[in-house]
Image (cartoon, rainbow, N blue to C red; front, side, top):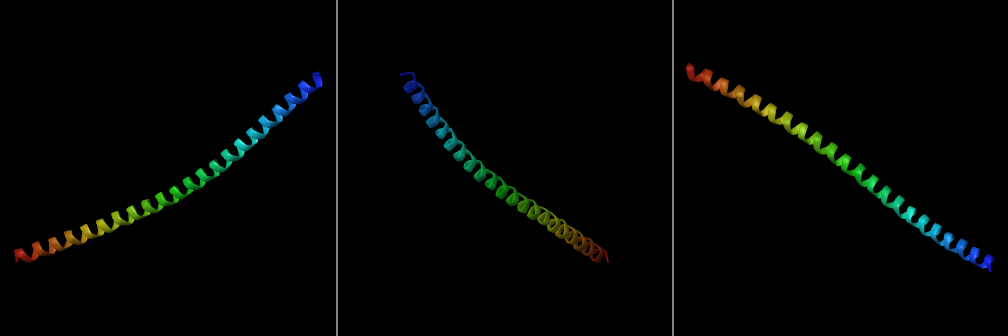
Length: 79
């Protein structure tokens, strides 16, 4: 009788361990998916940062050219 109880307890433990292993596998898969998503978002963010830097440089160049043209216009208006 005691052997049957012990056997049942081992069976229960084996089932619980199997469920825990399955849960761990699902968490590992979800974790990998999240890591891939983070990597993708980081790459997207770097692209946007580069685009913003490029835009700021272009804006500064345009501002410089406008200022230069305004100076030339003012110089010609004084004549």
